[in-house]
Image 1 (cartoon, rainbow, N blue to C red):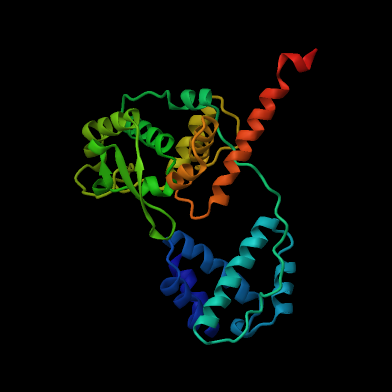
Image 2 (cartoon, rainbow, N blue to C red; image 1 turned 90 degrees about the horizontal axis):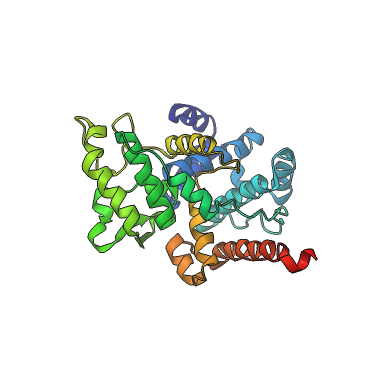
Length: 302
């Protein structure tokens, strides 16, 4: 949503103007993209009730709104409810309302889907790319760093020169809520990162200057969307037919660590998960792989 579109809608609603933007920009410690996403969700919510003040809705009103979004997936409706619930918690903390109308509303049942990941062979295939141009070297370095560290794509794109401690084998990243963490990086990733910094970065910058490590064709920080386009195209070229997302190398990193006996707590720290239950899903992937290999045991085929 464009800033001017957002402002136009805000100007049409006293409730939004008074509460939502202060909530998002003062109370919520998130990235701009996340704030815009939450703002859009809350705007849809407020527009549904037209001239009514969203601060003083009842439980039945919230349930009516969620029913109106029946075309959305259970995951999306759960996201709506979480966003709305957090907004009302904020209104309570500001003594604007006394009771949260979301209390007692059950979350939609979510189907538990295991994340898609690449096998070691598929990762080797994906990383085997030409490095003859500045863009090739940048893409190679990004792929190697992603798989070596398991950082989020947004964390990779936001990586700054001052966050690199390559002599110590460490990079510093800022995760969700601007939480800082130090992540080890292996020799292979360091090698290609140094090559990119030495031979490609300046040519991509041109006459401009930037604190960001990875530079786009526009001489500015590369975006998640641009990297996703490249990754999707690369997977097609390599014949990898899995459901590709920017997180696929992060999932692969974690799954391969667990499969090779890494401690779950260590993987949690590396990924920057605040709750170990989020990391726990990779043990399910590990168990799934174990079961698959067991079912292929020669004795079971007799």
